[in-house]
Length: 315
Image 1 (cartoon, rainbow, N blue to C red):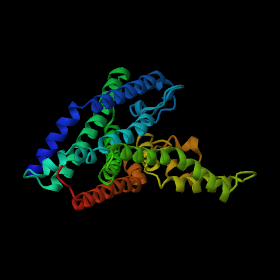
Image 2 (image 1 turned 135 degrees about the horizontal axis):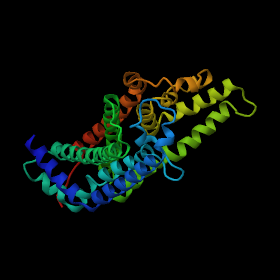
Image 3 (image 1 turned 30 degrees about the vertical axis):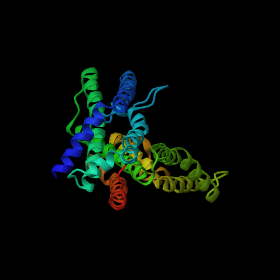
């Protein structure tokens, strides 16, 4: 345990003193503050149909030019996770630091565990700090304190963001262990992210239109087309993450993403007056949350096993 803490403290020091941490923190803060500025400009119009969750609109309202905070965070979290993990092992191996560390009384598993925990801690600090900063600015600007349920929803939102970032960090750390060059590991991680975000929706739409063509389609066929496309998209952690945070932060209407068949019979104007409670929202999204957590654990477990079995030569 002591050796894990040693590696953990060393990695935290490296993260906080590195230029990439400062750049990432600055980018996230600029994006977050820009989104909250847009939210404050448009929040009065958005509260015309009050649903009792005014404070949450700080994170969900978008403008004509800039998207909402949850859109920004959905794009930045994979990037942060990838950057924190893509050179965790191979850069140490190429520089010879890994073999020197292994010559010290430090167990091999302490190295990967310490690096992993330090990455999670740094990721958590970045996410939690920008959410709390936006909450503080919103509280001072709109003058409406959050309810207990809104506070819990925000904390669950932070929790999901951390595990989503942990998945991408674990995946990039896996490539860092498998591949010798840091450029190859980061390009592979980014390629997977781009495929899931850009190309998978195109493929899902093409498959759905092939199975159920929309030309002269009835309302039932349109719903079936949407269900097929959405089920394919759910193979992506990005879709699961978007569903989870949307349902948590948009209690009135966000749950239709989880149950797309509701479009066929629901009266949206009535449903918007009856937002989901926190318990109902968690029931809706717990499968997505469990899958994200499981993927993060699986990626780290595979990384751990491969790293423990790798040969590390002295240089």
